Image (cartoon, rainbow, N blue to C red):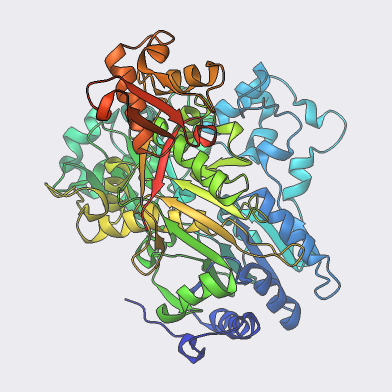
Length: 619
């Protein structure tokens, strides 16, 4: 296992931003000089992305940077153009983005029949360049993008890398060795499943299509491969040694079988090498860091790390890394270079970023799947926080959570919203000073089991464990840390990253307990009396009071309200007494000595009542 080699401990316990930037320059220099793959651990907004460009400009070294989103690449391009750097830059072309024959609708789906054909071939593993070269054979026609010259996509990939100081691309561009050979490489943020190919089709027909074309394997189809492999061990072993590529689109072009896929060689090898894990997943080592796993539904996932062996050096950038996952997706051991030690990370959050983190619940609130989302409880919390802080918050939650919240009126309470899956590389909340995180993005047991299986571990949820204490075993817990706690912290740090008009930082309320252990939030736990639960009736009672003539100064009896609502007399009385307990109303019992008479109610501050519910914060 790797060790920390940076000089993070040299920073004082209360470092300034200037000191951090100086320290970062040294960490970046050390990382690029390191002969193996290096990982710079530097919390967001520390300047690590800009820092690698600054290093390239100062050293004159050519660099290729892989990033998750076009917004982040836009930032890189802008920095390259600054006078202090003045770096020539080229953004690598993308088939979906730059080919003029590809037409997508707003949701990213094919907008016409030609695009559907193109993407169908692309899903079979045929590269965009090959699709253009073989258009007539694959599609029976010339592509429109080639009618008046070269397609912009083809022009964009046929470049001379030496002509540019900086190349910018998505993680998937890392597979093209021309763009990394004899260049320094930076991978900005954890690539996640970018190097994992999910095969959702049926494996048996795809393997059959491959072995039909592969003369070195003496099998007619998938079934014979499994049944008779022991009879032909010599031939199988020779094939394993001689096959030069486990990702082959040539046989897709040649095959008569429509089930052919470029992953055919890899699927064939995986079925020969698979071993059963304790939780019934299958795991297969495929060589050079390549791994295949199969779940209990017989669906395969293939981890295919890019070959960066000819790069001058490789440096990964991450704010909240989990080293074990980085080593898995890169297929190599990685040395960790932390910018900050554990003692001054909290100081960085509070004093440098200006973040005030307030945890509002001890509940786990796993909202990614949508099942645990509780709009009737959470919407009143959003409303209360906005009123308490005197400004409209930005909200981050799960994609399915957003859909549920929107039907309860979230858009009227939030300045902007986003889901966890769309945050990487985004700066949409850079000047938002009030944020709310609703729930955590726990992906479910299946995904944690899959990542663990890719590492050869059998992960299962330990019986009796739940929430933050959920135990999947060592590697499964590493996955949960990466995909849950660290993602929540990353979401928190999206707020207030940009200083504007002398103001910086943000107040962020976190409605989940899924923060990393080292983070020290202020705790203001909420209790919620929701008024938007089905058949609750409280909102009816409040509106009925508002309809009473002179309600602010006059008293009224239960009957005056019960006659105006659809709930029963007893429920109306119960809600009125609740409003008294919450301080919105006052009450007295009429009659001599205050006993035996009817209850009379009067206003205290009902005009201040929220729309969605009553929320109280603990001290």
